[in-house]
Length: 184
Image (cartoon, rainbow, N blue to C red; front, top):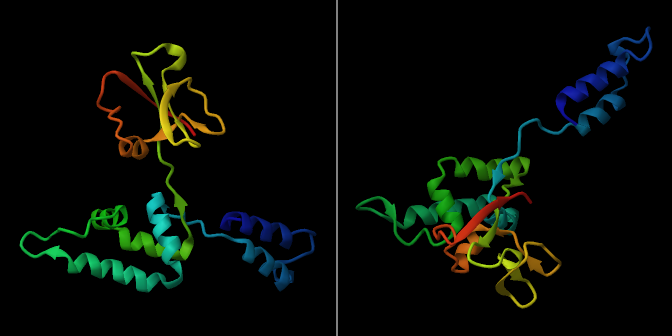
């Protein structure tokens, strides 16, 4: 329940009868409504790898946040103030490049968070027959192949950019492939 909705409920409760006055509200009723209020402040939207780090470290969050910041500071190259060996993980790169990373991490610890949805793509090879020209990944055999563009239980046809790049497919720069952004 949001704050405005709670105000409406309290108002309606106070003026149920024509003779009821706001001072006649029962404390229990007011407390019940106040306990349902969620903050109107939106939760930070973060990448999956930040959520993974947080879930792993949330029990000693402030200590781990301090360690993360200190590790980045310790490994800075004094000559050019650029991290040398510190950016070996997605989280550290995100933390170093994001001016509000510390604030975001603290806010997500206090208020919760939502995970940013990664864009999904279908990849079509223009050189193949139209009935079997979509890039698929078979979860069971963990192999890639071209087939129809239909998701099934074991076949994935919608892929993230990261997954495609990690698998060595250069589809974003190759004219032989059509990359189509799709909704989830």
